[in-house]
Length: 223
Length: 287
Image (tube, rainbow over all chains, first blue to last red; front, side, top):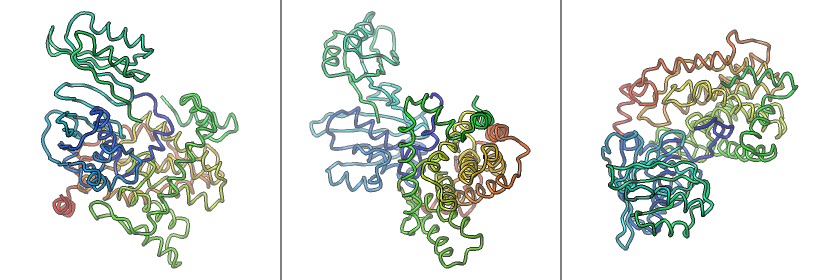
């Protein structure tokens, strides 16, 4: 994080009681919604560590659901999010589990749509309302939600990353950060690109057409 | 490293308030005009005003049920003319309780610098504003002064209970409020620095020991006592009382004490008040 500014010290404007357990939880829900990128009707929510221990008193469950409903951390309807979810026909259930060696404020969402699409998204609230998405469908990522993000699952072959960056350059997308990781040499690799500009549908379609690309997903930043 | 002493010296040289120096700095850092910065701060001020008002009715309850209605009790006593500590301090206490109750009951607040310490600053601000009939523009400038001190604290130390204990949250808020109060009361930037130092010295060593891990007990009432402490520090500094240890060194001391604090006393609810028999009972009943 860079140098704090005045509005980090007198702000954010948020619904209490806790920046990590409430504001951060709203942002985690909102990020899961953006990553799923489509309508969902059912969400299974698994709380870990401090989220499980003290979540109830911090309204963490309400905040997570508020985020799933596209609310922001300063939305005064957060305390009514369960009713609002019910009105919209969103089915929710909560569980507590040990998710392993992760940050104490961690949650796993399993989102499902009516047509059977399912996605698992795990993220942590790391303090002051800041978050990081740690896992999407078993793949380890590191997405703070500050940038337009491209997540690519591809074969671990020479030149794939160059092809992708060329397509992004052609689409006038400037790369802020980029991480490539793989399970083992020559197998599947995962690349996360954080960019200053939106990665539009045309660029995404071209990237998906690359022979080595297995899956590509564009995620909007949080506000 | 940022230094509040530097800010005071700059303000003295240019004959400006510390807040005005901070605005110039932030115009560069955030690439915004002064008018944009002031507008954004004035939006935060409005949220502060609303959160001060909405807790005084006493209708709010926190999720655990432990918190709610205390701001209204203090306010009612003052309105009956029975205040022990006088109008100014009594108002500040009720207002700090109000914002903290709003926070605990999932209402909207401005983190100042955190949600758990959000009651101190608005309580002191609105009380001093009223007493001196300060202009809105000066109130906004005073908020920049307090945020400037917050930036120095965040840079030299931190404002997180998990890192530095309660001294880093309500302690920081108290120091920020003291510097702001001096400025609004017509004191010099130098006097503001002394007020901040006196306030923070009085909060050194305070641990973060929330019952059941919630931002309720002892946080809410500590916001109220923090507000009164800020007023006491400002009163001393305005009278010409000086802190022997300068503010930057007090901030560094707070950081050092935070590092020496065991993990059990840094927001983990594994020590302090959180492990009293009563706290354990509350925890068990609630969860």
